[in-house]
Length: 76
Image (tube, rainbow, N blue to C red; front, side, top):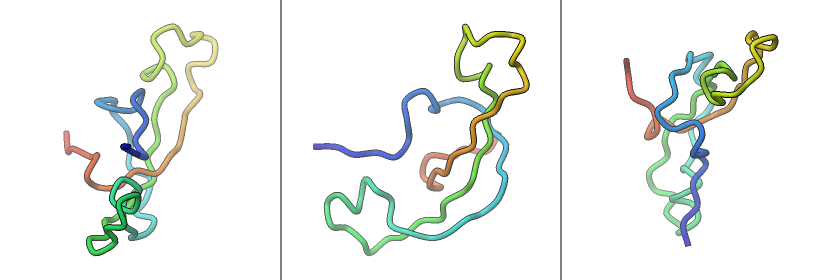
């Protein structure tokens, strides 16, 4: 069993960090009762057109905001 909070469609997509939101054990660690190493979670903003290649151009201003732990983030 493997649980992750990072959806596949978000991986390797560029986002804007909106804010630092909280510190908590990542879900993938918590699933195995490993709560000794909390990580910071960030609120991130993605453009829908970056996530979905066929997203309609008339909605190009649409965004998706979600939270991910620092382990899934990489500076550009």
